Image 1 (tube, one colour):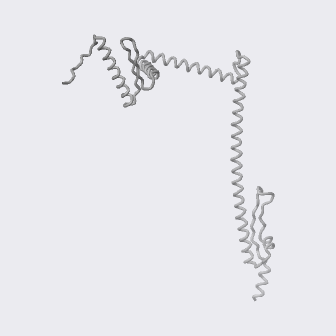
Image 2 (cartoon, rainbow, N blue to C red):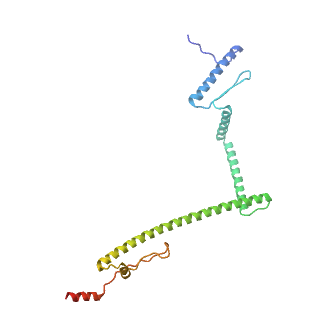
Image 3 (cartoon, rainbow, N blue to C red):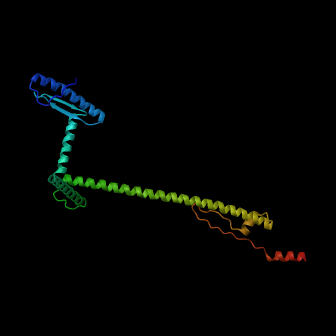
Length: 233
């Protein structure tokens, strides 16, 4: 036969009451541990016996559980109580107003205004703060100037490389023109051909100097054509 249903009421017999308390207490603590492990819950259990003896269990620590409970209770009470919420916002507004006044006062002092009432130590602290701020501004300025100089230097190197490439191309064209001149006029005097037909190209005054390029085709003299015509006749 199964066990009968137990009536939930105070046990009059002190011995039975103590035995029941011990059994139920152990079972309750066991269920609390299982709940914390199985469900990843934060559990806190506090039990006082009829004689005033304390029994407790906490999945983390009883202090953290009670602090979390108190915080939750206060927040929940503030949300449900309109008057408490109004007080909180008034207190927050007052705090922000005080912070704004302090910032405005510090700004005026940094600008050299309203310095009355400041002691020598306060003035020295203000001077040190200004010097540190000025040092930071100068360092930022120097860094910007260094970055601009480095950028301009890179652009200058790029332009120099372009000039070198153009110089190579012009020299190649000059050599091709000399070879063409030799084929047309049959001369072997490269210096004379260069002097007669071209103006030599070069870079004077270092790599940074600009060079002017001028190419001119030589025109044969009219007397050569007349001599050639007479011989043909």
